[in-house]
Length: 633
Image (tube, rainbow, N blue to C red; front, side, top):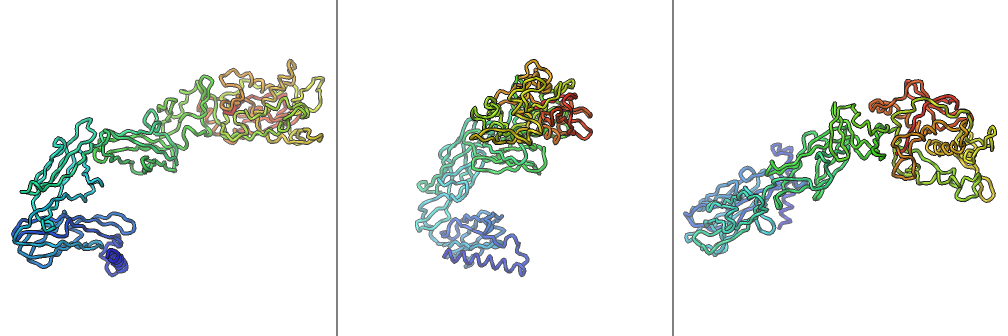
């Protein structure tokens, strides 16, 4: 029978949809809506001339496919009919049907949905001369406040009206009066004896929850009763975020666009009814959802920086709430971006600006090591001047190949390069490996220009002596010139001489700088061929640690090579603006800066400041230029 009923319902709904043009008064949004009406009883016994009785009824409606709830009331969305006339009088109420007995007989009233498609429901009413005897009473528990355990859950200060059905000795419901009382927990709840309206009292501080017992007693029959347990829950008095380290010390969430952040909250007192909702302002850059016990905040991918306020609020007690600010930036404190500032304190590095982000028209937000937020006027960076080292030119570390010593795993390697193999070992701080480093440009450069060498000499010279001065094996075989890049280096394998290529490592200035420092030290007191900018950098007395082979630290300052200068040139405007804002020395027009890139026996590439940035020029080694150091962090 249920299948037929559902089929008829679907057919009626389909017919309604197909006839929409012929019946334009029917709302199109209700075409596929289904309505359900339930009665508290299907049989009722009454006495002729007796008092009226309200048969409880409920109504619900929803979209058939999407299951979306729709508004519905008994008085507006149903009609009432009664047959035959004269036995009873019926009146449709919001809570049910009021039935008044008139004369002896049997009649049936029917409630039929009108606005939406649904099945009619009926109740058979028998009116007799002799009243039936009450047999039992039961409390109606169809309301959503009743849980599956049959108990009523109620918030402190709320009210609920009970209803009950008295069953006669004939097995039918009867219009019998019921008296209501609270038999346990009178300190927490009271009830109107006639209407059955229960009101819970405000729980005292520290009371997690309370229990009361409500009893329905058939009037004049104290032995016919029914009980129900009422659980009274406290309202939320306070809410807090239970996920540790979700907010900083200022109770702010500092994040970046597109991020997804999860957190959990807790409410007080323990056992309080959890009705917390997430409230966001209109046009917020944050959306909220739930994932099990977590609240999920998703940051917009739209333009930033921006800020918004997120509020957790009790729906029943709006005064119990928690708000925090969300600052959304293009990137957060874990990211390294071109133009970031790098700070040093006690010889240790902070490789980001710890959250320094521009927001608004005249404010920077800086989050210090303790997670505290400080507002600082835009452009004023002197606050950190004592810690300032330089500006980041790039976050990409150039690939540093190890070909030059790849085949020097034994002492047969030509030129005794074996002794230098550890120079290329993978204990370098991430260079050439799959790790993220940033290129830092020193805030200031040398106060006076120097020569590259006092007398030009190609470090990759292939003769044992030059002007009577003996050259080291290092200078003979670890080449840096364009000539050596094309000719390569040699190594022996199985009695055969093979050739390699220096191109991959030559572009990064770090290893050439180290080798040039070894080369200069090998010359002892011979000053002519020592590489001056390398020695100058090695004599820096600031707090920057030198290279130690510890991958968690730094390369120390070195003379830039092709790769480093290329990044500085690419980001020239950002780098120069950052240097200027921090009180550093920018690249002046017309001045030259040295690199490690030899172009011949007597010449080196230099980088000259021009109006549009930097230009690459060849400069004689005995000319003068400035020294500006970089490091990888």
